Length: 218
Image (cartoon, rainbow, N blue to C red; front, side, top):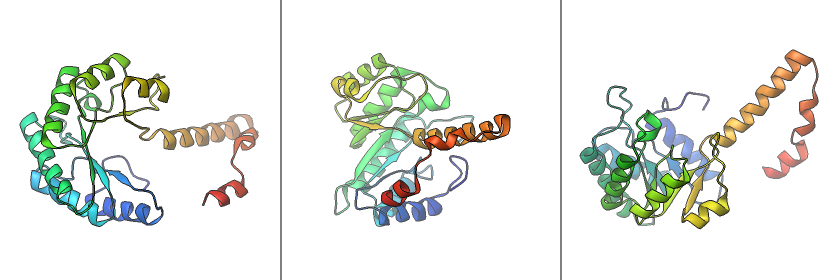
């Protein structure tokens, strides 16, 4: 959308995901942020809207977007997740709800808190658990030992070198890459721009995808 993260509202998000759903036969899951509201009722409504747009999965975060209190208190966070789960599991088709513990992303790297939140979201009915920002193999292993729902981890972070085989062996069930592909593309763009400006050369084009390959892809 060409905007900063966390600046897109629910209506814009639903239009965007609808266009993605219409472009593919694959099942689509979306980042539904914190449900676009504080109340459990709003979160449940977001799940229902997402389903109407054709989504078959979505994640709900526990961030408040309030810098003074960046994550919801655990009791409210669990209540919000329960509302999301009840809405998801009442749908006439399977909807995979991912419960996110985002304390690491907001500057509160507390593994005990993360595990407590994921356990609460598991009890609230989340189908998949996710704690973005966890990059240590030992921390992932501790989470896997503490929960009994599939764990999603995010790769593509700088300095994180675990591959799919290692993650699978640990017991990780789903891997996402967040913004890594987009940032990799933007990185190539910026390197090409610097080459033109600083060297006056165009060698970057040697690694560019061909028109034919792009046409075949679409």
